[in-house]
Image (cartoon, rainbow over all chains, first blue to last red; front, side, top):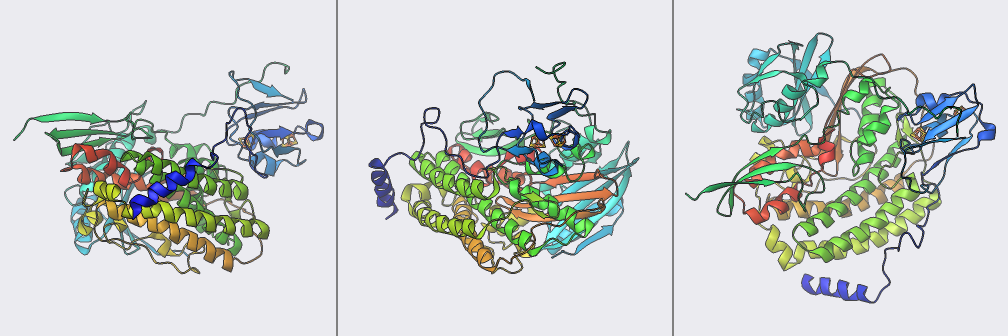
Length: 109
Length: 130
Length: 359
Ligand code: SF4
Ligand code: SF4
C-alpha cells in the first residue's frame, strides 16, 4: 500500500541527519571540474585581446597599452569559452563561485 | 541520421485549403515560422505525421503582409499567428483568438522586421585600473 | 445559468514558478473558458542571432531554458552540424545522449516535485527534490555545471567522461533508481494522489493531435510520437520504444513521465555499455549556408529549431518553437470544463516552462 510507503519513508527520515547543509556556516562541497569563477595568471598574459573579443557576454576588457585586464564578474557566465581560446592558457575556471558583491565593479588585474 | 524534410511551395490563397487536406490526413501542426529575407517575409507552416515532416512555404512583402488564418482548421494555430503578427506585423485575417497585438508586450512595435539594435558594450574600466 | 465571474490566474501565483497569466471565466466552481496570455518576459533571443556569431550562439541557446538547457544546446548544434555537414564523432553522440537523458531525469524529478507541491503533498515534493539533487551532482561532476551543462559545442562535445567517472555515475544511478522507485510508487498508487489526478483534464487522442500537443502530453493520450525515434545522436543504436498511456487524463501524463524516468536510466546504461572510444570533437571550419528544421525530444516534448544561414558568420534566422509553446492550446482545452481547484494541477500536468516559451 502506497499509504504506508509514504509513512515508512517519513519515519525513516526522522532519524537520519538532514541532507541539506547549513550553507553559510558549512561551505558547499566543491566538485572537481566544476565551472566557477574565472581566474587569470596575469604574469603569462600577453594582452592579445582574444578573450575579450570572443566572450559571449562582453565581460572582459583588455587594455593593451596599460597592460591591464579587466573583468566584470557579474557579466561573466562562467562558460569557459575564453579559457579554451586563450593562446597562453593563462585563464582557468575555479571550482568556487567567489563571494557575493553588492556593487557592479570591474575587477582589474 | 538526417531526416527527410519536404518543403512544398504554395500560394497564400490556397493555404487554408491545403492545410485542411493535411488535417484530414491526420497531420499535427508543428510550427509556423516567419523569416525576414531582405524586403520579403518567408512563411513556413510545418506539419508532422509519424515523424514525416512536411513544410508549406510562401512569401509576402515585408510591409503590408496579409495572410488568412488557419485557426478554422487547426485551432491551436492562434499562438503562432498572434506571435508573428506581433513580432513581424503580418496581418492575419480571421484569427479565432486574436490578441490584437498584446500577445507579446514588446517595447517597440514589430521588432523582428527591423535590424537588431546594437548590444550595450562592456562597462568601461575605471581609468588606469584600481 | 449561474453568474459568470472572471478570475485572473497568475502571472504571480504560488503554484507557478514562472509568469503565465490565464483569465478563467468561472460559473460557480466550474471553469467555462480560459484565455492564456504569455509574453511577460519575452527576451527576443531569436533576434540576438544577428549579433552573435554561430559558434558563440551555442551559449545563448543553452540559456534559453534553465531545465532542459543541454538539449537546447544539442538541438542547436545538431542543426548547424547538419547544415555544414560536419561529421560528429560517434563518441560525442553517445556523450550527448547520456547528458540528454540525465537532464531528462532531473527535469522529470523537478516536475514531480512541483506537481506534488501543486496538489499539496509537501513531503513528496521534498523527497523528489532530494533525489534530484543527486542527479544534479552527477551532472556537475561530468559537465562542470549543475543546470547549464555547457558541454555541447558545434562539432562535438567539450568534455569527456572518463571510464572511472562512468563507473561511478552508473553506481550512483543505480541508487537513484532505487530511490525513484519509492516515490514513483507513491505517485502511481497513493489514494490521495490518484484522487487528484484520475479523470481530470482528459484530452482525447484526436484532440491531442489536432491541438498540436507534444511530449508526455501527447503520449499520455495514446499517440506514440517521440522525436527520439528520429534516431538523432546515438538513439539509432539503442533499444528505444516510446512510452504511452491511453487515458489522456492527468494521471496518464504523470504515469508517462514516471515511466520515462526509468527508461532514461536504462538508456544511459545502454549508451554507457556501447560507448565507442575515440575523438570527442572535430574542428569546425567555414560558415553555415543552408537551412534545417532541427527536432529533438526534450523532457517536455518536441523542440523545433529552424536555422537558416547564408554563408556569413551570423545566421539569418533562428527560430525556436519550444514544447510549452505547443502545449498551451491543449492546456486551454483541458481547463475549459474543469473545477477551479483543479486549475493548478492541470497547469502543471503540461509541465510548463515559461522561460523556454519566452525565448
Ligand atoms: S586571451 Fe589570454 S593572453 Fe590573450 S588577453 Fe586574454 S588572457 Fe591574456
Ligand atoms: S568564462 Fe565566458 S563569460 Fe566569462 S569571461 Fe570567459 S568567455 Fe566571458
